[in-house]
Image 1 (tube, helix red, strand yellow):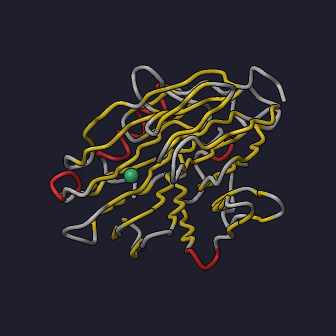
Image 2 (tube, helix red, strand yellow; image 1 turned 120 degrees about the vertical axis):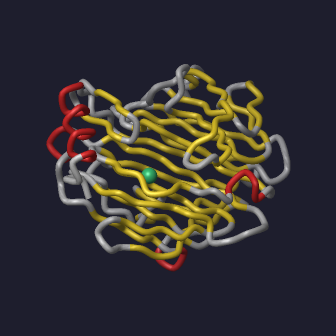
Length: 273
Ligand code: FE2
């Protein structure tokens, strides 16, 4: 094992988004704009309905994929093309916004814990204007690897031969790992890889990392992650960077400022739906 697999440790910041949903934002902040091609990572996790009840009313996207993973609770979603459905605990909605769609996500519950993640994957130039589509991934078609007290929920990519259901424009690995004692994770060469510790605490290269923090790894490493608390869990994310110029404007990510201006124009003129 490379003794210097850790590239950096990142702490999130508490923000408010949608109609006033309180979130821990890890990626898409002034400190960390992106880990190419991941341009946003939010954790919403609260027992207090005041933190989530307002939801995310109708808003547009272009140029990205938005991936919502529900851990606890449920969301109802609806889009401008007549699509919609309910996202229950364990479900993933992998939405390719492509050339443009509007959607809303509202809690389908009035009390209890809402816990989930929203991730944005930036599409490379050649896929930015593809037709929008959804992949609704349920617990029934999500493989789970279980060994030595470890449980790895494979949302996208493949882990120990188990292939996640997501069919991607950008090859990406997305796992939710419930750690037993230790596990080895692989930060592939030519990929950008990181974990977000959502529960408990872990020891990596003699550093103690507690829940709420992210650890980014240098590519091409095997990383030994040791649990140092009960019920430790983390998200593992890894993807090939686009390595392209980008411009971000609210819910749109394109390659140039002109394309962002065009997206706002299309939205205002009712051409983005
Ligand atoms: Fe959205």
